[in-house]
Image (cartoon, rainbow, N blue to C red; front, top):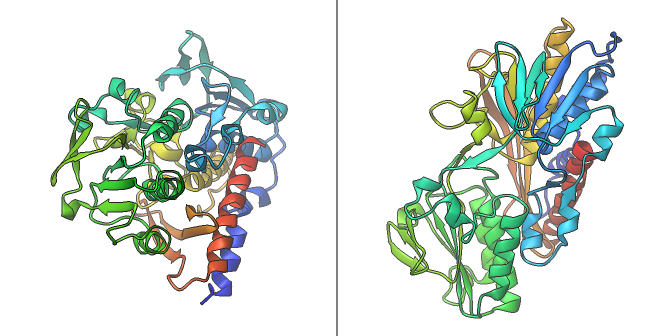
Length: 434
């Protein structure tokens, strides 16, 4: 049975990258103001930071916007799994900041060091100082390496988490290609919250696809600290259809927390992950470490005890540091997952809120949504779509609508879902980087 037309239309609309908050933002006219009416400093140039800067520029032609990002090119995570298994060139995942500069956004390739909230200044690693009226932090995630005994940032240079683009992903690809036929690939998955909840299972899917073709006697084993996972029924159905999941011949296996899959340690000398169910040996080991807000956010007092940055979900302003907003993966907006789509949605909401606040305009009710596509194999995609209702009283973003790829979807539906994943990627990239 095919998907119902309403769901297909909604997915197609979302794939354009124009969510409800974008429509509201673009519908509000730009306010004519004097040159450089106020200054905004953005720390971090990923999907959240770049989308915020460009959205605010569209809203206000005269605001001074400075984006601080140490890397001259952004290595994006979405579709990085295709590079990992040799289905995509790395160059298609790398983007620059030329379009932002062309729109009058100053891009400074430095690392942010310190926020002085009293003076409203950001100090950079080279000692220079930027003043701001509003600061937006979009610096992403950090890793709790020490939560797994035997693992550390130094060990990660040899045993990668590969939960971002660049060198880590290249290293994991090299190890996967060098693994002999018959070896095991181990993926350790943390508890929530972490970037891209379905990501480990998409990675396992495409590694299984790679092994099926290139190393048919090998297997990928997912060791999970959770008893269940996002889109589990859809993933497991795909694994059964494509990779023999559940059979002795399967080249993919999932071991959840209830089956002893929680990883608590790593023995590098023996090539073993230590789980509650006993040691598991692998020739390629991918430890997706537990996560928290990055060092910059935490060192500047933006993170709470749980490791993430609590925000006012109407404006994305920090609940801990005034006039500083946090968007993207570092932000703690309850029930909103950490994904590129959610990050860009937050960026639009934040841009509109700052524009309204700085010009004395009434705040609009924010509209949040998230859609996440996962590739399970060639021409086989699945998705989850969530629409949220903002509750200003509780500061919680409640799920109003949740749609997933139906289990009785047709082969054509799965093919279209895969194509929509590519369309979504193109839309997010275009919105952020031009």
